[in-house]
Length: 276
Image 1: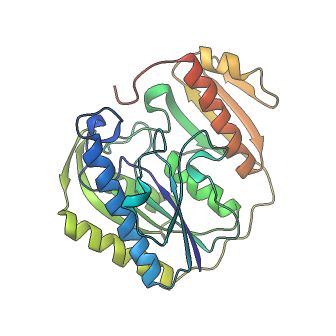
Image 2 (image 1 turned 30 degrees about the horizontal axis):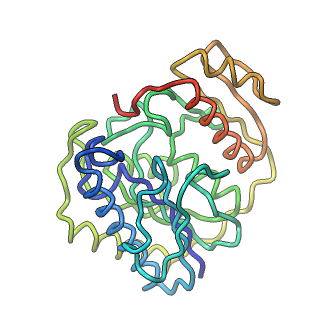
């Protein structure tokens, strides 16, 4: 059994603030250690369920948060950026299951460090008319490749968002949001044990593969700055809904890859901190 893991940071055990998850933050070094321990817990669960191959993609910010030496020896790690598929780099239909570690709720939600990909540069995202954030877009893209998402860890808001998207995914709340920068923390040992057990159980009861998507989807993004969509309109296939909203259509995996280009364009045009 081959298992793919996408590891974000905002939904990691114990982390609640930008200083926990941004390089240079006063608690960032502790945060990356906590991230490695949550990932290791998920990997232990996968190995217990019989996984023969585990690929972990560092999916947060600079994508150099996880130190290879901090992970279990069984792990293959994808590290660094830019990556064509960003948070889903390395995911193909050859994997039997996907696990999301440390994920967070979408922009505007009442969850810890909630946002959609770029802090508040992105106000809203819709996939085929349905509001979506990093959770839903990752799930939909994996499903389009024929890979089921079987487990997710994060705060209770992230878990609720996944349940609304796909109630069959096993979720593990490692903290309970009291605001965007505050939470009641689950004890570390308890949270890690819950992650390990949930991943093992989800992979032991592996669901049937979704049929790979054959049609096209529509991705719509509303930006804070009108400068971003004005520039994106120079790309083939991108159209405007209004001064701050653009859309494109195509196979979902291709749209996800194109969205990464949109974010790189936006990064070159803006300089706002992600958690203001």
